[in-house]
Image 1 (tube, rainbow, N blue to C red):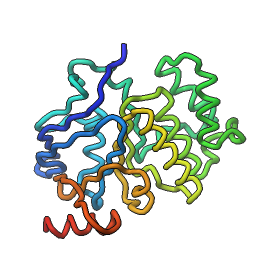
Image 2: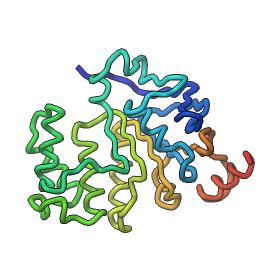
Image 3: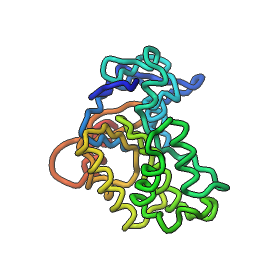
Image 4: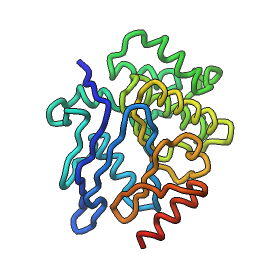
Length: 236
């Protein structure tokens, strides 16, 4: 049975690797029907936060609730409601695009699997490459396939770490439209990215992550990049 939730609550979460602090007392909410953007320099803690939200990493302190649930309460039922696209695309180069999607669909025990796979290939604009081995794909093609792999089981929470990597302008626009569709359908989307210009077209709220801490990007005049820089300068 799936787990139902409309909001993810991150409550005073910290994460340490030995003496190195990756996250320090981060508190935030991610809500149904919105795209939450995480912005910050390399090593700021964005990927660590995504890993904790995905349940792949445990916090050293604090906790995460998915509505009224925790991963300790619900385990695999909760994980079945989470889709993740990270730096590792989790695709098998010796398998075709179709075979990759079938493999992950079977892991989730999905019904109507062939129809889901065909639809996903169409959304990725890979129908004509469906039976080509993924090892022959460019980074951009693999990125598009991996994005649909992460959505194949219709997760409630979608976690994206640098989703625009390797995408040309047309593919990035397709991804933006896909994100808008997810938002309008009531999914919770959390996206870490450096691509301010592309992300500005789709994010509803933005957080600045720096040196393991997180706070809202300043409101007011200017582009997202300008407001982000103003936020960082105010915290220096």
